[in-house]
Length: 151
Image 1 (tube, rainbow, N blue to C red):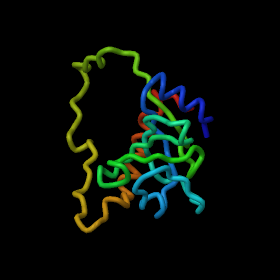
Image 2: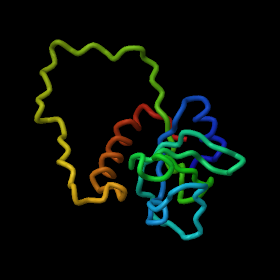
Image 3: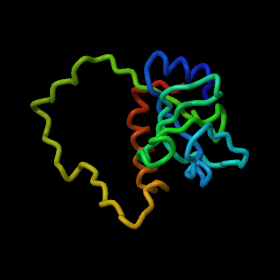
Image 4: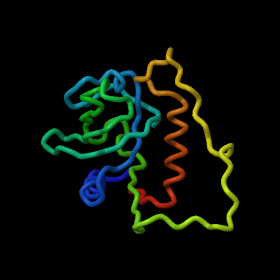
């Protein structure tokens, strides 16, 4: 895991940093303040974004993907080093100003080759996330990994 100071420098230099964290029922139940749990969490299983920090709190400002009904309008303060926060921290560096022009000789991509997400299950609790979200986050992380800097 990257040192706290390296993640801070990346946020300062490049903006929000993608990372992972261990999520359990305590994390899911967060409503405010600095999350500083004593109960262990053993499996890193959720993608998040670190958007800032506060040394007076000893905590990261974390943006979650569960929407504004979770935590503090979709955000959390989490103590440095808790629940593996910052695991696989990375940011993307893009040095181009425009994407490359399409190759006129290339065959058009069939829409059937584009992945389709299944319809949301209205009976599933969105605060708990889903296996689909975890797989999507892992796939995204792998796709971006080529052009990202892992701290």
